[in-house]
Amino acid sequence: MDLEHKVLAFVDAPAVLRKLQGNGKKLVQCHGTFDLLHPGHIVHFEESRALGDVLVVTVTGEEHVNKGPGRPFFSDALRIKSLAALECVDFVIAVPFPAAVEAIMCVHPDIYCKGKEYEDVNRDVTGDMRDDVAAVERIGGRVVYVGSVVLSSTRLLNQNFETYAPEVRECCANLAKTFTSDDFKEIVESFSDLNVLIIGDIIFDRYSTVSVQGLTSKNRILSGRYIQDDLQAGGALAVFRHVRQFTPNVTLVSITGEEDWINETLSLYVSSESDAVLRVPEFTTVVKQRYVEPQASGKELSKLFSVNFIDAQHPSVKIQDQVCECISSRLENCDLVMAMDFGHGVLEERVRALVQEKAPFLALNCQTNSNNHGFNIINRQYERADSFSLDQTEIELATGRRNLDYSAALSDLMSALNARYAWLTRGSVETIGLDSTGSESRCPPFEDNIVDSVGAGDAFCAVTSLAAAKRLPLHVSTFMGQLAGAQAVKIVGNRDSIEKSKFLKGGTTMLSV
Image (cartoon, rainbow, N blue to C red; front, side):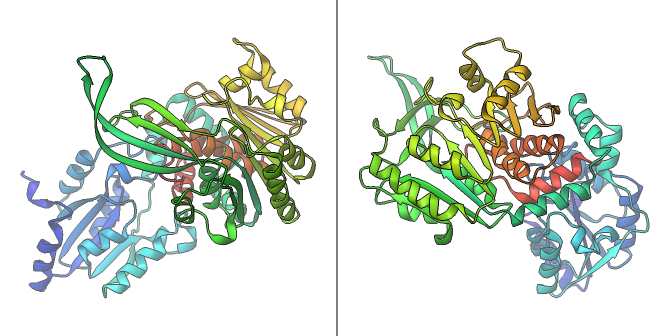
């Protein structure tokens, strides 16, 4: 049977559906991911179809599914084909948006149907259901909750399909034995009462996209045709944006120059009450310009080379004193201080001494990069941290050795800093976590389809710092950090922050094993 007539393009659907309504047809809409059709869906659709004349099923496009790594399991084409094959379904529309509001505005349903499990909007971890109801009411429709049979596609997929790599499945299953989806949501919501002070280097990442044309004929220089620039908020500003997803009580202390673009650009990310950034005329705002090729769908971003705009000399003692004064006035009211040290001048010796002495809980990330390689080493710069995270290169520099027993080296570093929590991220290999009780947590990476690894460590540090400040169990904190990193590697650079709603949805999905 030819089912193509049932499939409508998102841009074409409104005209088709308005004509049906003009002819007196009552439209009923169901919306979801529908990753694995099961009997509960069939009952849901049949009960919905009985409420009107035409059933329109809108399905979230695969690029916008927020159910964590490995989802959707089935492609758009397969999910649409399965839905269109159902007799009770009249039309299917793939929606290029993560939430349902745009789908509702496209269909303008007379009746919008959701499962009975959504009737209590407080159990919706994304918070989207309130928006859905408001959108339906705006267009004069009504919401009906149906479904006498309730099953979970996520649970069926997790239990019967290879949704995740075996080691990821084992990690989630072990955690789920003692840590439920409701526990996860409750803990994430509890982050909102933390008062956080972030201190560190603001970095703006400029991604300049070029199409490589080849080598010049005379000097054999790589030649490319310019396409576009994209300025992104990185460094401590990226961490600030991640943390702000979980608590509104966050302040950023940093230094920038007084370039003519800086105030307007900063205002896009930092409100006046959170802005403790010193604008210093003799300081150059750090910009790292990366030349990249156009992104190919499904492949990691290809980077060609980078040019950094950074002062050769670090800020004067006078500027360091100004930073210390700015920090001192805010330390009393904070629960967590996050020192994001990229080695570009904010966390100089005076500032480091102050935060180590006065911070109520100090979370540390001391990063190695091309500008500070071999100099910004965590155990040479710091003597105290309540929690810290670092990567494989950074721990090798800290120990002065390669081919380490990484767990033992992390334990030694943890003792040297008198830390309560420590994490070592090893990219595609694993993450090792330790805490002061002697517990160890080893967690595999959750996402192997990487778009860009830049910023993943910042996202990991942002979430684990919040978890550590709440004194969460090590295995829970490590899971949360990996989940944040998995979301971050699907984002080009620091174009976007991780999103709390995606984080909640991904976490609850992975714990449904």
